[in-house]
Length: 70
Image 1 (cartoon, helix red, strand yellow):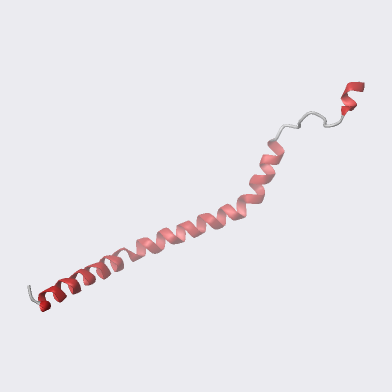
Image 2 (tube, rainbow, N blue to C red; image 1 turned 135 degrees about the vertical axis):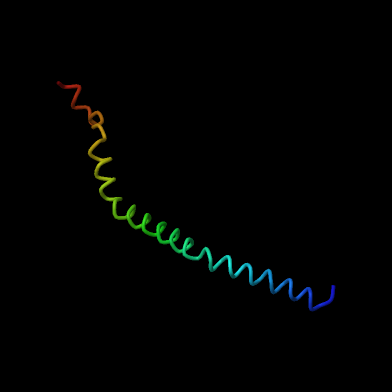
């Protein structure tokens, strides 16, 4: 193979890679947007999740020894 054929193959592979990227770029952008949205929603929901966990936690035994006097 001569240099022109090798460069043509390299150019073809590069053009195919760019074409596939452009073809799937809306999907890539959508996946990235969904990941960012999910992260923001989780960040916004974090205080409420913490509050629910705190309210559902059963109270532990008293830490002092005053229960012995009852």
